[in-house]
Amino acid sequence: MVDAGSVPLVSGADVEAAAELLAGVVRRTPLEHSRGLADRVGGPVWLKCENLQRTGSFKIRGAYTRIARLTDAERARGVVAASAGNHAQGVALAARLLGTRATVYMPESAPLPKVAATEAYGARIEMFGQTLAEPLLAAAEHAQRTGAVFIHPFDHPDVIAGQGTVGLEVLEQCPEVATVLVCAGGGGLVAGMAAAVKARRPDVRVVAVQAAEAAAFPGSLAAGRPVALESMSTMADGIAVPRPTDLTFAHVQGLVDEVRTVSEEELSRALLFCLERAKLVVEPAGVAAVAAVLADPAAFAPPVVAVLSGGNIDPVLLLKVVQHGMAAAGRYLSLRLQVPDRPGSLAAVLAELAAVGANVLEVEHERTTTRLGVGEVEVFVVLETRGPVHAGEVIAALRRGGYAVTTE
Image (cartoon, rainbow, N blue to C red; front, side, top):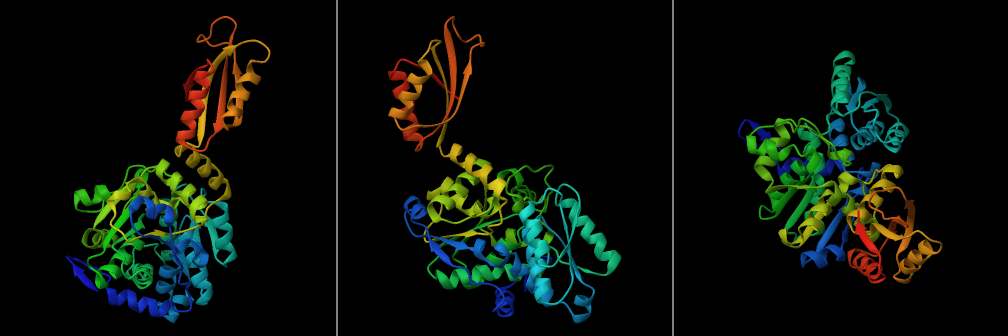
């Protein structure tokens, strides 16, 4: 390990040892070129597809490394973990592969597909609390009560070393890489990747990306110590962590070049981009790196590697996020029009919309608002367009037709 003040950091050698341990256990995930991102950045951009890893995320790497290094006596007592989903699945599968029992505490808000998958890997599930903080306390108490070993999602050198093997693969698959972008919640993945990358290529820029509504690292770095957030509100449940630990904070402070944040709109737009352009299903937490590239492509020197950290998304949430992403990308357009209250007026509006290729999703009439004169009706329409330019063409066509148009 490398010493950074009072906190020893995981070294490149630690990560390489974890890679040997994980050989034949985890998948060497593909590196896919993204022409859509490359055009924006002005050079090669690659996606590291950990959404295609076993259990659907990188978490199996750290969980297996940690559990494999327990003694036989420790494994005989079983393991316990707390997670909103991805770490839960990683621990469950690692425990099964290594012949030990796993109990996982999950918040009651955890996505049902993640709960079902964790159970299918053989873990015993305990639903507890509304946020991850409550299951973490319950898991720690379970460990004290039963003697089971608590497998923290990021606060252990073995976990960080295991996650860091993603960084070794990136260097092997893209030796010329100049910038690596990694999502960050508690910081285990970016800590491990930074340790691996900086040991071999200190010139490579490592950027951590957090959801703006759950970003604990910026405030912590400004304060010079881990500081807890008072509240969080993000669709990216996989990186919604209120406070880094001393261990992950030390790694990010010492090895990571920059921490960026992305908005909910930018996350949803990135998820839609991955679906449409890369043909990849990625969860909101997993697209944070792509969201950063889309938001500010000129900020990153190519070749760029953006890590897609997970693909475990509830189909219900996927539907909502796709709709949100389409709205953020200007693909949905909401308009109010004042038209004469007489037969055929609505048909005329719809004909205008059809002529410019706008797809009508919703239509409502309003006759009682004070905005209307006598003999007028307000028509509210939600349209699907081909993007912002097309949306502008739709509005212009309606106004040329004599309609008073306001946008929502």
